[in-house]
Length: 153
Length: 81
Image (cartoon, rainbow over all chains, first blue to last red; front, side, top):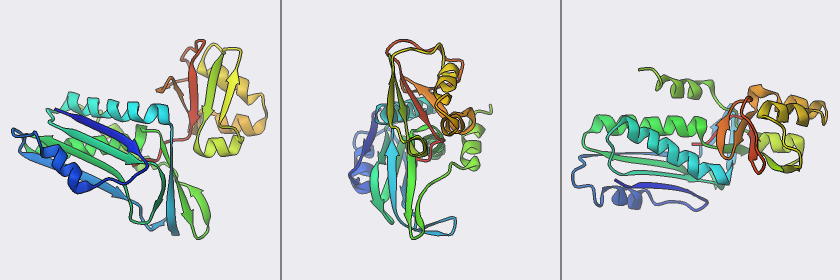
């Protein structure tokens, strides 16, 4: 039952991370992973690059807390969360979440839960570098709603 | 003394990434009010709606009490992931 929570500039290898997740997980039958990438468009603007700012003293702590909250809800095996910071080009990987569990239902739920809370509670901010200038991405109401939905019994 | 940090759009708007305050306001709400005295730009930027506060890396509300040595951060709604 390992937590691997990393904030870093450098890219990660999704194959290696998958292997790490399943290495000592002989009783786990399910692995679910998610990877978020830099998109080429937002609100009609053409994105050329993405800059990710963060609050260093808080990001690791907050991500670790989100993983703990997921563990309190479901019986999880290994969990990995990796979030990159700095300047990223189009189609580059931004974030990775991986979860192992005995059965697939919990793995899908836990992975979604972690992403929903990462998107609304973890102190990262995206700035798009576009053909029309630089713009800070605005938080979406839909993301906050998704986070709130997990609170209902 | 407390340290106050600003991130993202907030940092750009206020043109400050950190401030040291020798006096410790009693709570986060008082700190917002004190900083707002710097002018309208500050007042608008720090008004609670789109400005979240964290003390020692935990998100708090305006009633949260401040103590000597605390690190306060103000930032816009987050957009990671």
